[in-house]
Image (cartoon, rainbow, N blue to C red):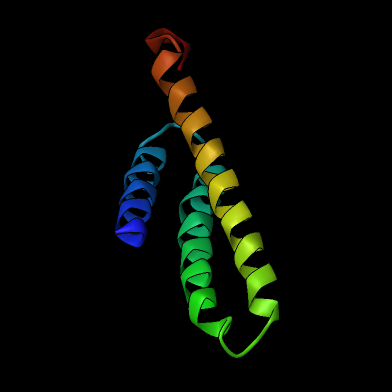
Length: 87
């Protein structure tokens, strides 16, 4: 349930960021990085059984995931609150 919920949030925020007017060089990493970090985080659940370094890698992936989601939320909020004629 945890993975499905976070995956849905990453999908929705990625779609919203992709629909903004920001440059492609900013939007593309904000769509790809959280998805990749989520995949690495989930893979680390199984890698941790055989490789101790997977625990640290999982924490780093989670930090990248949530940093990307935070920046995405900020960009979406700015897009929503910015006056229409300022675009």
